[in-house]
Picture (cartoon, rainbow, N blue to C red):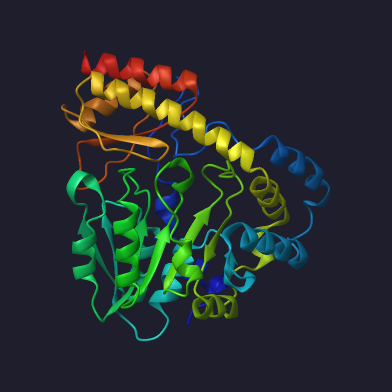
Amino acid sequence: MITKRQFASLAVAAGASRVLPASAAVPIAPVQASLNENPYGPSPKVLEALRRATVTVNRYGDSGAADDLVAQIASLEGVATEQVILGEILAPLGLFLATTGQRGGNFVYSTPGYGALVDAGRPAGTAVKGVPLGLDLRNDLPALARAVTAETKALYLVNPHNPSGTINAPGDFRRFLRDVSTRTLVIVDEAYLEFSSTAQSAVSLTRAGANVAVFRTLDKVYGLAGLPIGYLLAPRPLARALRDAGFGDPHELGSLAIDAARAALADQAWVRTVRERIAASRARLTQALDDLHLSHTASEANFVFFESPIAASQARAQLAMQGIVVARAFTPLENWIRISIGTDAQVDRTISALRVVYRR
């Protein structure tokens, strides 16, 4: 079994996907790619908390403050405190699962998709079984269920999905999770859940004792990407094993991140404000795609995903001339482009750029 402290020296490459540029709608200068961050930043209450916390920036995060944060999360999510593991832990969790129990095995996930967790297991010899997205670029639940075998260490899903932004019907998704979790651990990454008006958290299954773990991050809607912090809501046996291996260590989180997280979670009114603004901008951008007759997914995240009728490399170059940075492709959907939703002014610029490139 590997501890979290040992992870850094064994799997630096596994977490590298977090820093790859994605796509963005940004002002021409400076040009900076977005990783689907919140363009409005954190709550003003977070900024005030950070101002107060700067006097203790010379100190590590302490266990008392971390315990308070855990209690706050447990209350918000309706789980026991011992089920909350702090940290942006997807890649370390992947390596932990890969090196726990029998070596080898496999992870199952949807492709294309965010792969930090599943890729982290490769150095330990755990195979990755990618299941192509299905109709309308949603998670293909029947195919995913068929891909799970006795050797599967975990099924990893992102809901809403990244990069498509799609969700499955909540009832279907819940039945799928209930069924598959009887055969293997299911990890649901809900990084973009707050941006959806219809997706439902899988944490109710965790509360009910199912073998379902839920990852949440404060990097997105809460605006804390610069102080990355998240948490896992885990079945009790898994949570206990993770704690024993050193996960959730407040020293590794840092005092600023802990204070910022507490202030962010306490201001749910700000979350609602950001959600509403992103939803309105997403609707505008989606309408622009429709006006340009560009095929796109039914995204419920803070980005849109559309198919370019011209080569993606050409589209990227032309969009860059308009100040819109579009970076990596999502194999095998080579001609699909993901654009993060920015401020109102940035969305205006994005729509204007799309009209120039696609000349409608």
